[in-house]
Image 1 (cartoon, rainbow, N blue to C red):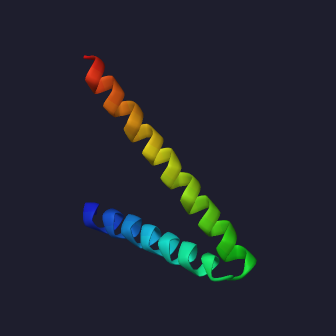
Image 2 (cartoon, one colour):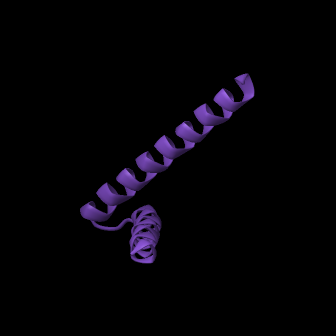
Image 3 (cartoon, rainbow, N blue to C red):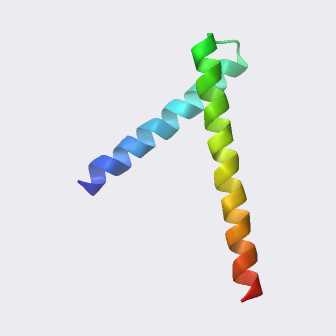
Length: 59
């Protein structure tokens, strides 16, 4: 079951990356929306990782 969930997450990530590249080349509106969402989620993950690193340094 865990493998299926991980494959699903991997599929979503790869699809998001494809949409980012496609949107950069002028894809349709729905691709631009998915690309924007993918970039926003990536930024949230990056910020969360930075916060975790700062907390580890304070301890």
